[in-house]
Length: 332
Image (tube, rainbow, N blue to C red; front, side, top):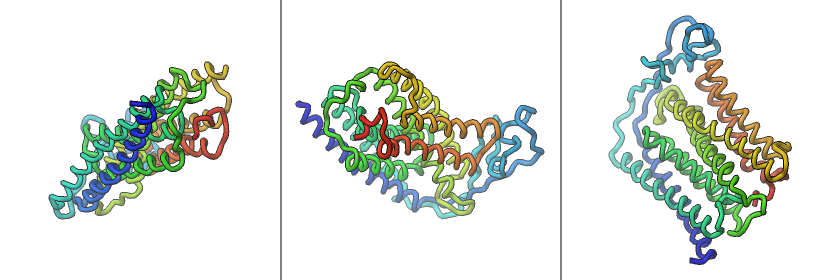
């Protein structure tokens, strides 16, 4: 098959992925809308607060708010899960079926997304993330992958509608705003570092998006009757995703510096992309630091991680659209 045919096939796979993600989103949304409503009951732990390092677990350290104490610890010292009491009637069987269909379509969309990346790579005979279009397509794939892997480990179908619509919108933006015809890239990108640096950034970004979706739901979820999961469950999903993504982002920043030294003769040059990558790293480091040292949980920690997500989104999109620098060759 010729390179032109492979490129056209890749474009068709992207369109198919968008449609499958949108229909999957509807299935997840139906299940969420007609699922069982629950009240978020968080039992606060009692006892004096003592500073971290004085023998108390971090969850009871000075600086905790009522949400921190409410989440508590289980018998083995792990993050506790809020206790829910089912308040609403049992959901209809068809609602559960809609969610199951949505999950199946999400896997099909994931396969189409993967096929789009593979055929694009075969068409251009290089790693298929040498421009903004290819990069966004890969990030959408990484976000859906993170969701599906998380679902294998625990039931996170409540995030399905939000991850699917994010992926569909991301792919739509890539096609409408960033589309670039298949072709070669500038010599600076013809390096093995693109497989190391950019891949790590893509994987980390996908997991940060998953954490952001869970954090947004946390802020939307009230304490009363709701079909959303308990706040503690939402916070746990976000925290686990960030714990995995942060080392990957750290590696991506370091690998980018090594690539910059090879390509431009310096590790750091205050290029806008470099600066905002580091700002994003600081923001997520602040989130993790606040949890470990100050014992931040609940709303305060969620706001910090959503601010970090905003930094990431500006780094991925805003820098390429509104700023010029050494990375500008990859924006369109």
